Image 1 (cartoon, rainbow, N blue to C red):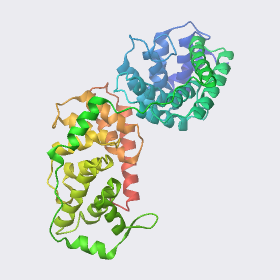
Image 2 (spheres, helix red, strand yellow):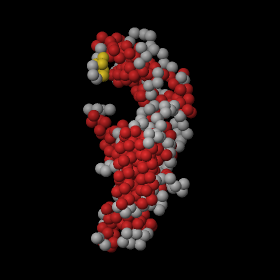
Image 3 (cartoon, rainbow, N blue to C red):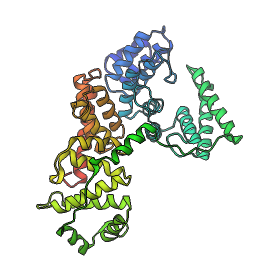
Image 4 (cartoon, rainbow, N blue to C red):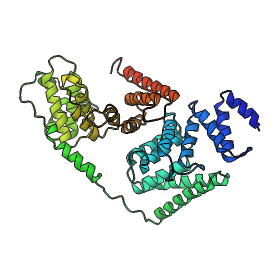
Length: 424
């Protein structure tokens, strides 16, 4: 066993594993006198080296200072807890991703969003080599009651059985916090008993949050979305009808989709709008076909196609295709879009104080929600978060983490360019 002095020497030389080992020893009093100040010192030293595990440990510490537990203490510093788990999640720590999901699940610090929480649980599951008992318990509860996903009793049973098995192994191994594992074990056992006794009700069909649904309905019926169908001859449209290109796989042709759009198919409306706009947005003298595209984008939204909202919002925000910029209209289209990356665009509004009152906290939360998707299209949110961490805007300044976010942003942007053959 390495002596404490040798570990300190290694840690002083920059050995992250030694720092984490020292943090654990001082936290639990293993081979040393328990000392939370020294525990935090060494854990923060590891975090400064961008150790995912260090951010995870700090997240648990600030959630419940005495050690590991669920985040459920009224005295917890939720902003700091979220900051730590978010950093761990961005650095691909599976447990941190799961705990960020928990905060969206319960609405601690961030706005409650159980569908997004379930998405993060799935992401955590992919990061784990050996998914934890706690994550399996969450999956069991979600599948059991249809929370954030479709109800699936068979999936629930499988995850609960896995959770119980893992809790038993951890408890028998002499855990530092056996009460935590016992609490999870009992929850899993009790829920499994209810399943076996067929006492789980079917998932009711619930309407969206009433207030949000009313706001959304008011928006799609607002005159802001009025856009009449052009009644004049459009040469590009007639050319497309003659060409009848294949615009979807397998073998779905322009004229067939146009016919479906004309008959009221909201997906076809979106497909026609998207295809026509993208094909002609950079062409000269394109007003007619762009006008036609905008008509079908607006009509698709009127018929309830929320996917169309993000694309149309971007068109009005940037003035693509020669369209007159309308930032207010773009904001509401982003707001009601069901595309998650729209959160990043809304964050820009809050950061600038455009259309809405400037609010860096809301901007931060929007950028974070987008960044957690970990897709190339989130490069803008990653860059904006990098600036916030670099300059200490709303969050504590962290130059090292800001550099990492910048790296991820540039890498994502390069991926978009490479897939587009040199241009977006």
